Length: 386
Image (spheres, rainbow, N blue to C red):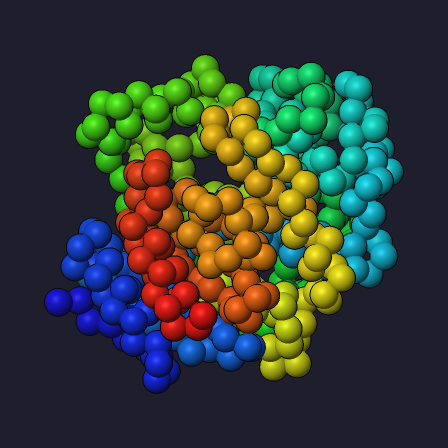
């Protein structure tokens, strides 16, 4: 039986039981889960193995790359600039980033960009990986790129490019890359571990990702290829035309080069307690720190994008960079908002329940129809706080 370590307050035993069941029943290897209620932690637990090569325990010092769960942190940074009056969601992106007006994008608004409507899910002839990781070349390519679909009000998930787009707007306004802005305005005030651009001094704390095998069910495999095949919009978006992903050499996202760069859509490195604490601070004060007020939260989390996603080929709902409740994501209720990441990680807040929720893991799930690990945890949370 896997040892579960950490804090479980009275009345939250069902959450710890669900976490333990993930190891016993759902193939969990190493993971962390944290829940804040009304600004304080009530569950903060870890378990399993962080690195099979060394048998290092997955504990409170472990860090995890969380893929698109990173997008929620980027959205929080943008919302903070909006609250300060420095970012107008309805303004053209080119108002802050003049070069972005190229190729017919002069009227594209920040709101449209942040809600995945801009048609910039990849770029034609992307720069080599080393140049992408240097950041400026991919930002310049996106500024020059024509939208990949006619603007029709529809949307498609900008799996990787979202972060460089939002990051450049944050940089043009604040003078800081998004990773530095996050550290100064979110991570350090809250005392959390969350990096977009990990210092080498913390590299040894990272738990390597364990890639899931492809689906064994032929129907599910066919569905995956329809969404993620190399010639699909989804495949282009999720890999930047084949640049990122798993190959014979391993997973690109397990490399020091990727950890050190800034991919504000996909390479955030954090832990469950930091995710939960960050989201708790979007709905109220956490030890004197509150990241956004009620009016900002309402604006940033209002659903502005819904319907069939041109990349994910399913219905998705977005606010200003946040995923919103759609009945599929393992969120707790209709006002909940946050972001999930490939393989299973997720962070979110639910103002109706007063919670901040964080889950991270190293064993990626290959399921396209819902991860039983987060579904079980969310059911248990609802049972304890509703």
